[in-house]
Length: 115
Length: 117
Image (cartoon, rainbow over all chains, first blue to last red):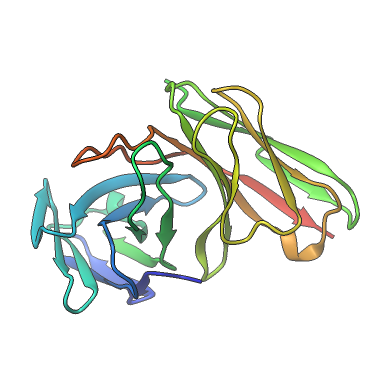
């Protein structure tokens, strides 16, 4: 079953505009991550936010987390054509040290940035 | 800097055929994972290996087997392929969680596109 669900499923914007994607999840998490997938390629880790954090920045990326609403958002500012990709949230449940981390991915948002 | 390498990149099979998808990582990671990605479904975990010598089922293990050949290599086998296994398969690796606030992200290969007729 999918833990995270992204909204919207698809988003088309002009270069220079901001893009906001949302993710909702169902159960308690240890942290939440965002990944990017370019067409025909594997996923690339973008940013992680821990359950005790509310906001995090990395370059043009801003992630927020509201654990009371079980939701997160990813904001990409001043978007570029190269930002065109699918974006996935992934939740990371609690596990024990020494174990593998099992991520549960949402269904993704397809972002198209028009030049 | 190869990272995670998957072979083959594309494969077409007939129903009932078997095949093995190969994955190798050169980052000295302990943990490795196999996912499948279907349209509109995101990624779903098939099997994972926390460390060399161990494997565990993920969310959708039926119809698959895995082998952690050594620290670098983790293979996925379809014994009798079915059309429902048509998908894109991704292998990933990460360092084992050491507890506390430490964290290492998962690194993905570019996938194997598998079609079963």
